[in-house]
Length: 91
Image (tube, rainbow, N blue to C red):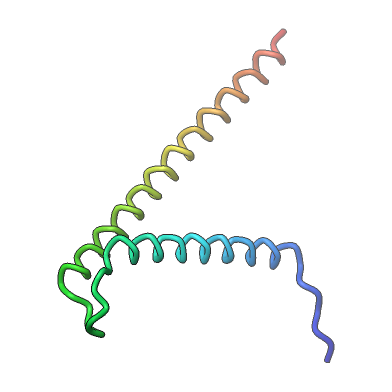
């Protein structure tokens, strides 16, 4: 059985997953560098854990807010385009 070539939908899904992994890795690196300073034990300290959780929570809230603003902008742009199309249709 030969392997079938990926479809365009598969390519889009791969791109979305790659973008997600890149974002996840970047946030993990940022939070690790900011929060982990002691390598004398294998255990994660309570301060380190709290810092990492706060760091991730900040990122997720920021990401949610940016996504929400982008969605609002898209809605406004669509409404403006629709209004312009209606205006051109009436002239």
